[in-house]
Image (tube, rainbow, N blue to C red; front, top):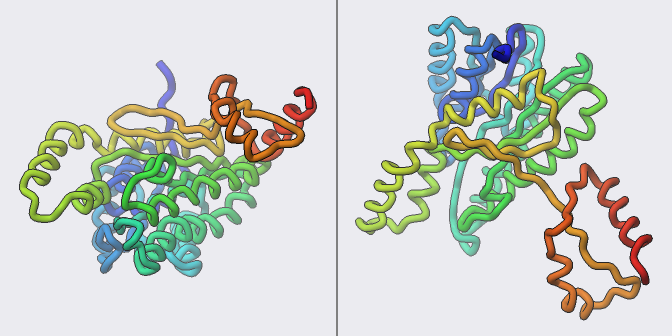
Length: 321
């Protein structure tokens, strides 16, 4: 039997941990020995309002179970808030080993109705929020020569989903953020990965409701049936083990994206087809060889821009021109 993976003596900051996925992450890491900063402003799923009781309730739950945790209600949407969240960990326990950027809100709408007022709050919470919390944590981790960071992306951005241009853009920005930090952190034993969770949380519930037509009894009946038959299987606690592994000392990977839901785990990756080469490439060449360009047979998974450039020059050098 393999040894249990534990987080004894480690300190984790988890944003958006007052409910849903973040709460499950906090409960699991605390149960495995981590000391947890439970960060949450306690706002609505669309970002309105605040209530410090959300984070405090999770802290109380952890402490009743014998774990260690402190609450934090600073906002991730500005540099001062990000620094304050990290300072909460340092003030309480003098170290920081893990950051899980989980805070998020939704604001779905068709693209023709996607205004700056709908876009900016999601960029602030998801993308800027991860940046503002990770930046001060990064300094601590680099100095200690160790760290684990987990960002939260989404299939809504990776694969595309209607009515979610703001959410998808913000979430997919975190993929680039993850990849760059993984490259920069390699020399300092800082591993950075991303998770695309599939869980029935209030954010998913809000998106499902907004996708329907208000007042349509048939649509509501279908939604209720889905919740009963399928969505109930998407327990957030079944995503937490993946988040825990990706933030554990023994995690061997960095710069990768994992999707998890209902007890299933898989990896998303960025692949490159073999493609087509012509030294005098024309518009018509692209048209005439599109099937070859798109052919996934023999694809590769470059680890970074240098790998991609190597493949480009290898193709140029080995094909007749």
